[in-house]
Length: 277
Length: 107
Image (cartoon, rainbow over all chains, first blue to last red; front, top):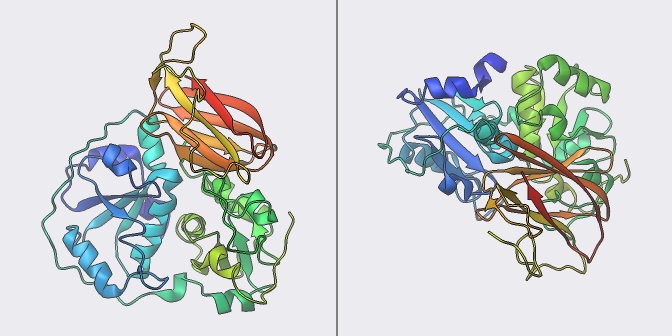
């Protein structure tokens, strides 16, 4: 994977709006954004209702993923182009999800919904009615997903990258500043984790920084690219963004997303926790 | 929209635990008349970023249909940055727990 195969520009989107092989999918944290207006022809996935199991805390099953994509008009050979608000947090989470289930051609709009809006490009409110397909997913590829026991065993061995804001990392805040502060978890971070906020990988307009800048960002913070890397945040979406940077843009294959993240780790009994910068 | 009254900018604070939250909120307006009362059309497609005292990015939200935004921060110095088509504005604020900051940002 690389920038050329994983990322498309807003210009590319405009040239491919009528391309039947391409399915645009908006995935937002604020799920009312799609109703306000979306890229012409785009469908939407609701990050919680469509992409969370609902009963247990996990990804939806292979069968449910197949049903979701089939009713959305996505075929195995579709080029799926994801975008969303919040600098593509949930769109990169969906990207990671498509890779978990082995979709071949999935890409992300560089800059996401924000750049599209900042450029004043058109949004529509018409909701498409795609013809159903028979999508067949692969078995889950857990080589890009980290689980809690692996994370605990990796302390002091692998790179652990905490991509939350400095205030969450230090233990000052329990959640991002646009959300009410939760009381359920211990505050702090996994010992030895490097705090490289996801936002450092993005320009103000939501586009990704250059590969040279990104590589320097992680190296300067002490990430050894020769080692395996685990990214985490609070619920696994912001870390999907940083996983995308490391795995897709910088083409590092030994990178996983710990989607249990701090809401799981900070609730575990007896695990080591660090506070402060 | 003219926003004179007790809540000049952001959304209604009913239901917010103000004793335990440090709220920074407001509204983004475009094309207002400079007559001493905040006014103008709500900007419902702006992005509002919250930077900490070192300039580090902390959070970002899109404005709602009324052009409003809200952050739950911690006491201290913060910078609010508004991005919209053809506009960029910065406002520095000092946040306190229990006393919400309510901004009107004209672009």
